Amino acid sequence: RKQAMEYSTSSSDEEFESKPSLTHKAKRALRKRRKLEKETKQLIKQEELKRLHKAQAVQRQLEELEERQRALEIFGVELERELRGEADSGTKDENQMLHEWFELVMEKNKLMRYESELLIIAQELELEDHQSRLEQKLREKMAIDGKSKATACSSPQGQTLP
Image 1 (cartoon, one colour):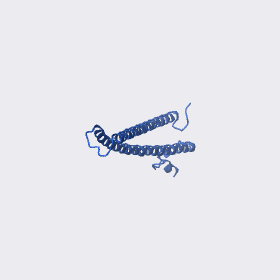
Image 2 (image 1 turned 120 degrees about the vertical axis):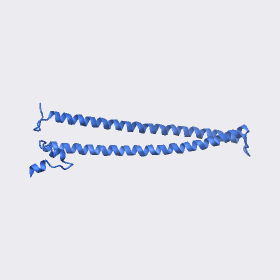
Image 3 (image 1 turned 30 degrees about the horizontal axis):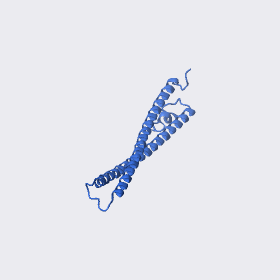
Image 4 (image 1 turned 180 degrees about the horizontal axis):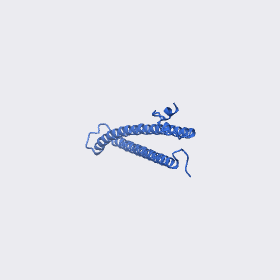
């Protein structure tokens, strides 16, 4: 019965049972490492989703900003025509139109600063995503190196070689 348990093919314990030479401590350490790896992957996935949601929000804000800039541009072109006398200004006097013009310019500058901030946030999110992928690759390489060192340093009986 003990041999049948040692060589069972259950997916979660397959690695443990296929290596009867592993000690109880080694099995616990392996389980603990796997649990930690799983938790780390979940955390990475959560962070990735947070970055994705933030990137989507930034994209929406950029689109809204672009619409507001277009509307300001149209209004500015009309106001400029009125100031030049090319369009009917109605009851507006020149001082009022200049005041509107400067307010328009200030609003446009404010929107451009906001756009710059959003683009910086988007770039920051891209860099964070790139960093996360690099860290994941490093973890994978370190895990592979750790496994190859562990298997190279142990004999078939489970004892480490000097």
